[in-house]
Image (cartoon, rainbow, N blue to C red; front, top):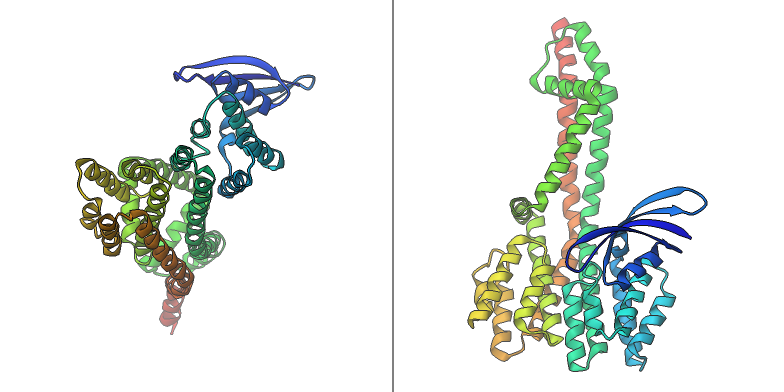
Length: 406
């Protein structure tokens, strides 16, 4: 048994603090949820030990994407087999090894037992189940095809997950190489450059500009390393916070779009994600306006989000949304808008967008496979140039000394 001092938030947004005894943090979570409140943070004191542990409750929402995919797919299969929703959730909860997912599933069952629909219960966990998940479940409930909707959700999430992993995998190789290069460079500034600097000072050798720059960097790291490290940390923190602002997002997202190799890949990834999400929602029976709105929350790049906002406004005015995408060829390729236009003409927007997403996902797969082959020689040139500048800068004073002796 533990004694908890906790902070919770009511549905009205008001926060309050209280104390309660509970068997563990999960029981406390359910006790607070049963009152319709949300647990924000707590301090735990194990009775008889006097040990206090500070924990942020946000960890309860950290459920891996693969767990969500398996949840949707397994639940859909159980419903097809004839199991009732509450029993299917109970089975998944008992066999799940993820404590965070188990806590969420228990809450879902409690909400359903109170009379809530499945989509309403899911909507109370927005950090675990995004709007696309909730909307597709709601559409499945309305049409009586919940199991099919869950299968579609699992496929949509799996495709997005695979797409994200491919892109990350392609960028991992250059990231590792550059990180190793930076570490080796710092070690050379700390151990190699100071030794050569002493030789230059003793021999009173005239130093080229690049050599003086390298020595200055070495001295800064050698004598002011802590301050340099703190400066780098503060710069990264500042850039990270700025990247969360509107201006920062526009700068970094625009920069990615204009980078060679990376830019075209970013364009296709966002186009594939838009097509996949939009097609999944429309085919599940979600309204077109709502589908476009939800897709805007799934797409990460702010420039693509803006296009989707304008497409939503166009649909509300009664205009064709393919015209909006056609006006932004620098973001969405012509193939995207043309296929969407065909879908609007034939009344098969969802089917056409499935073809679009399949096309771009196949192309992205090929490009990510080729990316390491393309990046490797570029990295070798960059590393070679850096090593060459360093070597010439540190060796040229010695050659000039030898020349003056002759």
